[in-house]
Length: 467
Image (cartoon, rainbow, N blue to C red; front, side, top):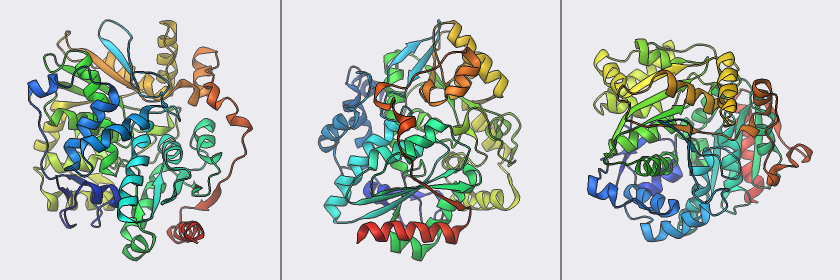
């Protein structure tokens, strides 16, 4: 299994190389050179596997034997052992055809744990074998940062610097990052939006001397390993509902496009997914694209669903590469124009191809509160992001009523207590292991959205730990 860049100017890599590199040197994202495709019999053969074993089987399709399934299986069993539900990612039926796929039973109460808890031991395995040390830099709109920090804290071969937009995460999200006082962890509150943080991370990777000096790596969903580790829960849900002998649809609240891209990848591998619903908040660039081929960048607006407060969805580049027939020069040119002009010119044929699979839906803050209240009235407590997903499922279902819709329930409601309180009048308590979160001391630094200042901070952090 080899990986190529969506922009075509970086050398191909194997899985371990992609894991450690994160972003390609040409600014593109790594994708499989060829996609593994399973037959119906092979999908049926996965039914009934415990989640860690299913995840090992799927991930092994992308590793090219390094590491192999036998090595991955105990690694993933350990990774998911601490989750708060024996199914790891249980399905909860909400009505006759809508199900919630609960992805928030990990240590930081968000779907990012599903991949990140496995990334930690993967990094350990590869770095120990190679005798290397890396510096991981990441941008977060709320959940990626805490999941990465929890997975990588106190690891001897990894230093971590996470950038978050100051004042634009929930207090729970921020404290889950800033109260981890491990020596290899550092947090930066950036004066700006998530897109500013993401741009800084990409700029550090584009700075070749700095990238080499710091041995940079990434845990954002720009890292292909993150996407590969998110595919299994879509497989598990589809199999539980009758696939491959029955079609399913997924509704995914979407910001950086990585989570829904994993569902698309499962479809590309042959899983019978009839439709993918993309839920957006007021930052609705993806919905505008799907409805009118309008991928025009606007200012990021803070909302009750902060993990979706994004206008530049990095993982869309991977889909664009596929929509353009894997034409790397065309992908690179389109992405350059998007960053230069704030508008992405997608050919109509490619747009129509996307619109046949994906459907967009937008829900503002008032609608989010109303949907949380509606679900609560039916006995289910949802966070603001999941509410966008359930509303999308009701508003844009597949025409065939026999097709079930699985909503990616991406975060525990306790991560967004103010929104839940506004909608329902009740408190969503944190699990016992996080009950003292508001009493823990915080540690983070504030910086402007300035590349030189951020690089100097990262260098100090990494060199201090290396010494």
